[in-house]
Image (tube, rainbow, N blue to C red):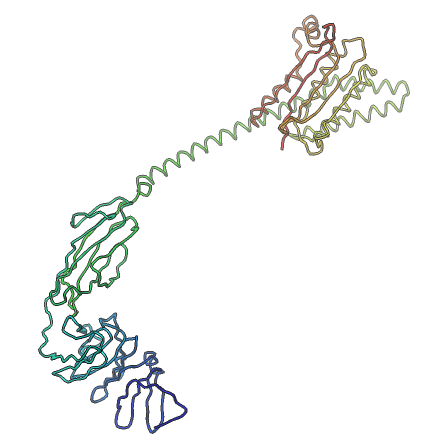
Amino acid sequence: FLDDGIELRVETVTQHGKSKLLLGTTSGLWQFTDRKFEYLGALDPMLKNRITSIVTTKNDEIKVFGTKGFGVLVLTNDTAIYLNSSHGLTSNSVTSLLITGNLLWIATNNGLNCLDLTKVGTDEMRILMFSKQHGLISNEINQIAGNQEFIYIATNEGLTVFNHKDYRPVNDPPPIYINGFTVMEEDMPVRTGYSFRHNQNFISIRFTGISYREAGNLVYKYRLKGLGEDWVSTTNSQVEYAFLPSGKYHFEVMAVNSDGLMSSQPAIISFIIKPPIWKTWWFITILVLAASVLAFLFYSYRIKQIRHEAVLRNDISWYRQQSLARQMDPHFVFNTLNSIQSYIIKNDRLSSSQYLTKFSRLMRLMLNNSQQIAVPLNDEVSALNIYLELESIRFQEKFEFYLNIDPVIEPEVCYIPAFLIQPFIENSIWHGIMGIDRPGYIHVDLKLNETGNQVICTVEDNGKGRAQSMAEKALNDKNHKSLGVSIVESRLSLLNSLYGIEMKIIYTDLFDKQGNPAGTRVRINLPIIL
């Protein structure tokens, strides 16, 4: 019958009932009834594949479909059962099917298979396999036919006639032996247990199943417990494991013959790969303890360091307050106010107003700077400039002064400790210039050091010098000591300890050409505080 709307390449045709035909095609299963084609691939996904053979029992209760590459589908009235190589078929490419009594014969491109239809889907189902080892002329079968006595097997190599009633299957399972064990390509004597280092983790195991009929063509099933629980099938008689992690392993292998019989007991070999030393519990324990001790020591050190820094900061703050107290010395304040009073008595309003303005500005700068650990260089210079102006006016301009800042310094953003320079200027005035009968001068020079982390302050005067000043002190006041300078020296020592830097004071005596004292130069290294 011709239907121009349907194009089918038919592989096999089987009668179904009295008036239906089942067609196995390259596109799946079709049915032909009353001159109409009907696609049956929607009944089961398996039926959408290329169907190469269809057989049914006499009463059509069981229908069997062979496919190209997907094994066999067995359909009963209410169940569908799939059979493929995972169940024991020699291949999933089925070429022909045959039912003789209760036996289903499945021809493939890799041998012949047989099973009992009454046991399909049960735990008792067992697939028998027949190949060249059993006498077939070829494993690549094109078609089979026959009855309950003889099976005719057509191949490209010729025809095999198989009297399956005379076939006697092997009833004894094949024994299995492990006959070789290699570690890092070095043969080891075969025994039940081994212990290896962590870097001895390339393992090779050889085994052999005994079956004279199979002629060395047994199938092996093996697993390595500790790496996985699933069984793996192979026809090779050797397996290799590379880069195994540390742990306990239990290797099991069994042989399976063509009748599906499996070794009664697996061959077993066990071994241990030790962890590296850095993964052992005692090493980790020691490491944790060592880390804990180090952490505790570091914590103790940091607490001690923080406490030490706190003490240093407290001491620095105390000395800063002492420096402020020295700069706001009552004697200086009293003399300054007396000078202002004298201008007022003389009715010199302009001078008294200017003097008072400068004095109040100096007090405000000192109080503002006293609240800070470090102050901008600009503020410190402003306070020094006002102080020198007040002292110069008070001593009737007995000396001149100069303040010079290196142009590379940005005084607004360069922070230094407060109240460190003024005591040295005060020393120059009181112990240097006040003792001479010539015009005096004080030069203050500020510049950066080579590394840029310190300001070098130089205070130079043309006074009577340190030697004469100390001699006069010894005669007039043996117990007098310049507290302002000693406070500055103590602060610098504390800052050295706190910031880990080297700040020092260098005194240089100046002489004229005749070798007479001509003044003093003091160099102070001031830290730049970020």
